[in-house]
Length: 229
Ligand code: DC
Image (tube, rainbow, N blue to C red; front, side):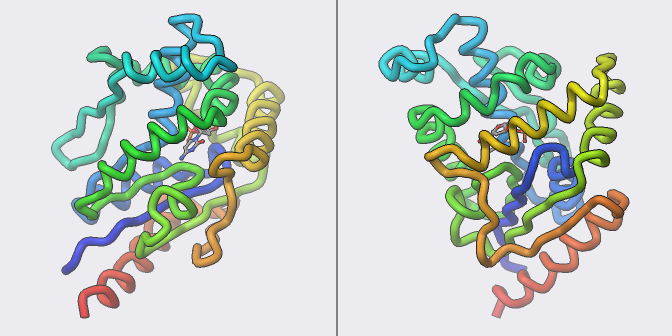
């Protein structure tokens, strides 16, 4: 069957990554976490004291930065590398979550990341999750899904994820971070978070992970059949 591009966008902590990873794995597609790229840039800027309102400094920093992924045997990008170092654990910490929306709103940063993301999806057979994948990175994606969930569910899920990594973060702090990122990601000038008009909306508040995965796989199968003829 012909390979397609699956774009999964939505608010923070709605289950995009877990769903996208499992869908990719079941289809034998590559999975790319575009948010991890913005998180890696944020880490680099933080470590190198890059001034966020100086485009020259920003462009120089971007030139000095290589972001790559290590894929597991199921082609799922499981670890993020920044200049050859595994930063997967560091980029998930709260201090990065608290700065990433500001960094990802910088036009120079977006231009560069979007161009890398397009290259990664050129051969199709990819599931990419983020905020502007269906609206901007791959406007012609065969399948676009927009995920959302209520705030309490999102905060509880994020807290459990962080706890698994040994970080105990109180629910109010997580909720504040999620709300402020939603706001910044939706209101920024460059490629804001919007619901693409041809996206399927998936509310995950009451769904389990296998149910979310089944929903996307069902749609993916329909699209693959459609695009095969
Ligand atoms: O998916 P995530 O929560 O790890 O993403 C972190 C941040 O990166 C998110 O708050 C906004 C930014 N981002 C973006 O601007 N565009 C994307 N395609 C993906 C993420």
